[in-house]
Length: 630
Ligand code: WT7
Image (cartoon, rainbow, N blue to C red; front, side):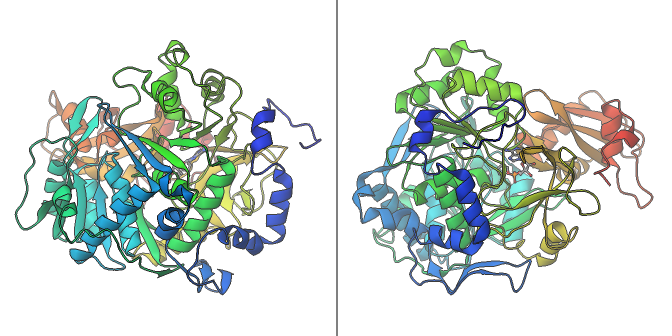
């Protein structure tokens, strides 16, 4: 361990964890990666299968359009499945799944490979080709994973839309990606109720005309509308001869796009982040291996939803690349009782739990008695992601769940980064609330307005100074916006959109977003999207949405609306507006509070000054707000 005494409250790695850790000497690994960036990533890439070796690890000749493993040929699915199926891992559990209603299913690597091949053949038979986009809209069920892998296997791009989104959000994403195929489930279970996903999809399809085929997975068995000539049951297709057991894998260039994932930005239109087979594969494989210290016998649980990047990288691809056993749970953490998670950890003997601060805070409220009823001694490592974790929640997680013997990996990253960027490994001393330092091979900094490194503890813009393999390659169909959004403020540096500070030990402390992105329960939403959902209601002329601190959710949405001329504020209008947003965008976007106002603060050019609204709501003087906001 470093001799230097660290400031503040520090938690050193427990001996038993350190003894097993892949990375025992973090400083050494980090120094070697800094010395030879390409060599570091090439060594990791060599642990995976390539049909053809790359010519160049990193090509920065067209920056900021960086390319990785140029000339290499691979397919991420080969490394997730086929590579294991020829070894003893063939019979190892790849996926354990529990439904909210208690259903249980499991898949060995062989079985997951088989299902993936069959479904890939179905997609091919329906005319899906290399480069095509396929939208996936489901609850947390194994078929979601199979659908993603099947697309990737044939070189098509999946675009997963989170099952908590609704009509307009789905329609927009289908239309923008020009998907011809939609894979959906009839419904999903959440808090003991059924969410009617197929019905939401039917409504979305009236607004998005590109889809020719809809494949419906039966989960709840409820009655759903099936449009003849368009809608087909997944299980019926999988029983046809077209669903053959063997499916020739599409060998693709390292830079071939793997998926699109929409995320909120500063405008009303979500951005489609593009990730690729080669670099994303190497990035997720390496980071998961070192950070969650994956060992052959582990049972790993990332409690996120596959519909977000956390699920893509660390439920689906990272774990399968590492040949580990991943656990997935369909429903709500508190259903039927607040011990559901702890019960499953005990039942399945899970070793690693990776979740979000909001979930921890939510479960904390129910008290220690619930986790204390269960044997959680299988846990070795804990993780958190999505927003800054408050030290109180960190300590509860550490003491009550981890029994003071499980280090907490606080991983900072983004949809855009594809992989962990600021994160400890189990060998790194922890400070509650800090993600510690950038991962080996990643260089990050904090800039002041002039683009100079901020002094210790000075707040500034968080930037990334080195390219990394899992970086987004562009925004789908919008390369200009890619350059503008991420690479134009400071030449040569990637702008994260977060503010942060670095302490005297070089530890990073992320503060939060500095743009108009709101993090609600760790979910990323754009002010502009919520505003356009509000304005799409007949009664509303103008709207502004901001995030204000919330004890469990981190932030909650507060909206201000101006009514259309001639419209009077009536009883029930606010509730109607809240439901309207939930119907258009999703329950997660439902404003906590809506206020009818006569005017909104604006700049001379007519842009709504959300920071003024925020300052007013917080009882601050807008001038006292951080200078980071423009
Ligand atoms: C934003 C990215 C990447 C997985 C989930 C979120 C915030 C993420 C942390 C963390 C503090 C965090 C940042 C970032 N964030 N992880 N450990 N500590 N803040 O992905 O939806 O693209 O959101 O989430 O603000 O920019 P995302």
